Image (cartoon, rainbow, N blue to C red; front, side, top):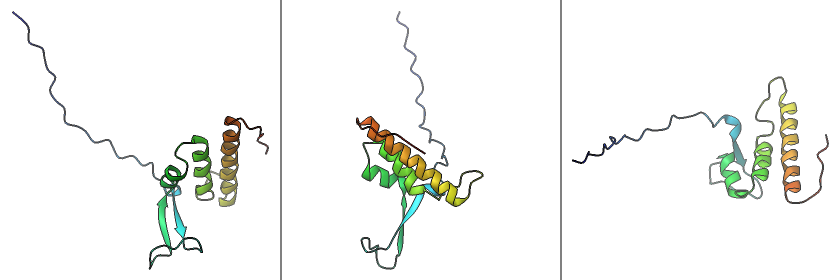
Length: 113
């Protein structure tokens, strides 16, 4: 006599818990300028930094990191730093990632402080 295989009960899919990975410094705005005209009645349009990165540098982690730091420069305040010091810190980090990209693709550029 054959034993019946035990079939596990089907589980209901569970939703992943909502995480808070979208702080304010990951958002920016595009303002009206000579080259960008938002819809009538709007002077600026809020955008997600991730959307910009996925649009402009989908295949380069180095450039994506650099762009992230440049877009948020001065928006994220580092502990113990002023807004201007935080801005400079993000620009230095962006420069580091740009240098890594150049080196990764065979260029010779050294990071200096």
